[in-house]
Length: 556
Image (tube, rainbow, N blue to C red):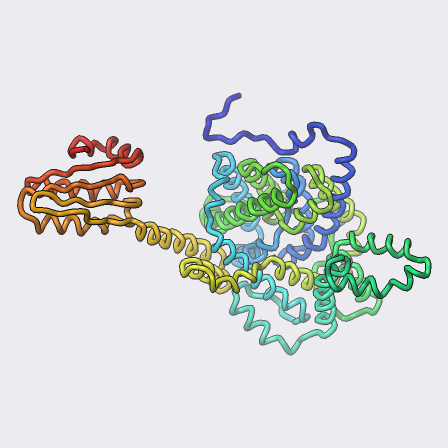
């Protein structure tokens, strides 16, 4: 079956990756998938809880969406699932529209994502300016950190509001209910996550200090066992180490802190049940804004993640259209099992690559690992302190933000500063939907201003019989006002003045520019003169030919 040229082929990366697949590659993929699956468990629960959902919503999203994105996606090593970038969006939608409408928005966003990929629009996502991406990413990181202060401090707030200033007010009003045990657990988790990766990095001073502390044990004949233990510890993901050790500590000491069990009653040990949310077209019309937000954010995050995966892994480039179609299928299916929006996750994808993954098989093993862990260890999750999950999310927010960009603003242009800071503050104060809309609008306006400033009109010569001008750049709707001096010359000149336009440096022309040239031609002819065009390039010539303008003027 031959598809029209404007349709993308549906060809998952998994099919080509299995060609020539060996046992050695499977062993590496299985090890990587096992590692990422363990890393994903605490993150999935934390993302769901922070989004105002039950922890199992994040877990089943990581399993179902992770498996679908791995099996159907266009990247060899990308890991899909719930992401920190969605926390603020999901929480706001649940607060404003309710859980059922979140599921409908997610499914509709899945359809939109699939359509973007099907019609080969995946490359358009790359046109979103970096300043907007950095702005809303840092803004989301700030909101994630703010939303976790309640659980980090152990505050007794019945329902955390969704907007920035209301959250600040709620935290200030309930600061007297601070739980020192929760704060100690959360800070211990955060500090542990910051130190853990540096502890076993041979290029950091932490690692050198760690080695010096145990050098006597090595000399005493226990070096082999210590080296093995160190290698094993270095492979353990920091979030898992923090989750297990601090949960055991809180359970052993019977610390009075809120846990998953006290708030949610635990995690079911059964597979999710397929169910249909209440659906009506009237509801869908109300959910256009959140649907577009989920789809746009999911597309940007997944394709950014895929590009990072290409750079880190050194494998062949991803297919952006296939990736969007896979993301669309995953987001369409997940809501029917009580899940939340999913996208590509940079941290888990990089972990997957560094653990040795070379194909989507690792992503499938990651999903299977989560299934086994959840079904086997679900009863133990009731003891996990929410302050520990808050510490994990604060670490995620810190890593998520591109904070160095604020320091680099002194080297950036005023346009970049305006777009980045504007998007950042709008994300924090209002929401991501407003930030993206205004950010893209500002980017378009500033781009038009910049392009119009590059268009030049130069007077070459002038006499009573002829005036000659040179046009440089692009004559489009944002630059048409710059032809007013030519009209002024024509209107103030004696009868019979001809105008010669040197268009050799005119790169492009749109219909607004052509309309101004039509007006100029009419004004010249009305005074008995001629309009002469010289040095036409291909694009302006094509536009003038299609609209019949070349038949009215003289050419050189």
